[in-house]
Length: 316
Image (cartoon, rainbow, N blue to C red; front, side, top):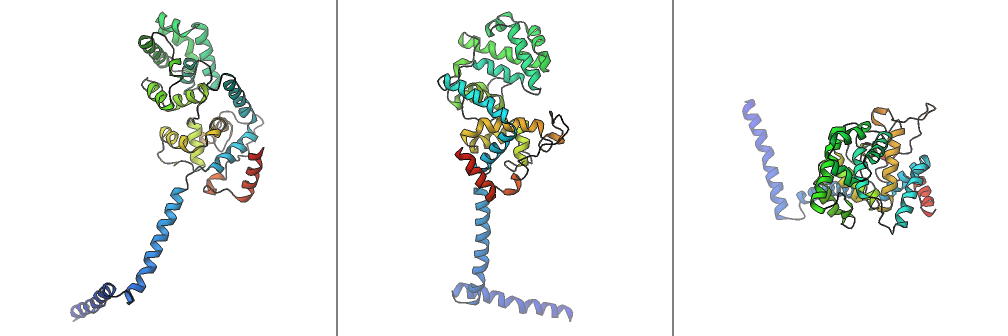
């Protein structure tokens, strides 16, 4: 009896559903057509909101300006150094005349070590080998290793540097990378990336600092801080992926300053340093009042008071 009752209940529910579907097909004024539009409109709104959120690329120009201006107040020496760089590039007719080979070698030495150690290693190398031709001609890897040992990984670094210069010497008759000076950015990336030890970050640094190109290198500090600010995903985003994305959205006139400021800030700020342990914390034992702390919560839209102060800074 309960079985037939249950069956009966099922049968009595089905016909109205079929009738409703039939009514929806046969008439635009029926009950079904009145119920359908709210569901459709609601889903369209959701899709539009999702599309709007996705289309608002972060970082926005305002975010980049705010981060650069705020960090400039905190680390004015960084911008001062960049102004000296920019002045030198302008005096050299805009392209920068520093040796590209010097830039490549010094950047290779800066990987996974401190600024002090990389500078010492480069200085020792230049004293040991007055020019890059002599480094290739001497064919003395142990001597190269000894000169750069302060930077660490001396054997690997020495082999890679020597092989790059030897290859170029064989191909072009000169142990110099300055032939790439007039290449386009993409040509330079393609040319240098064929050498072991020259990854996207090193090549981007060469483009930015040796050639004055609009590039935004991404090192560990830049990656970590941009993830904290919500500019790139914090899950599974590599430095290479972050570079490809950020280099396309950071305003060109902010790239050098913002890159250098983020690197410096990552070394001194407890909030932005790896594991909360900055490499060079304030000597008085205090913690910096980080100006970037709220950016991730803004979702790309700066509060009115920040926009007003930003507008004033832009006019300066």
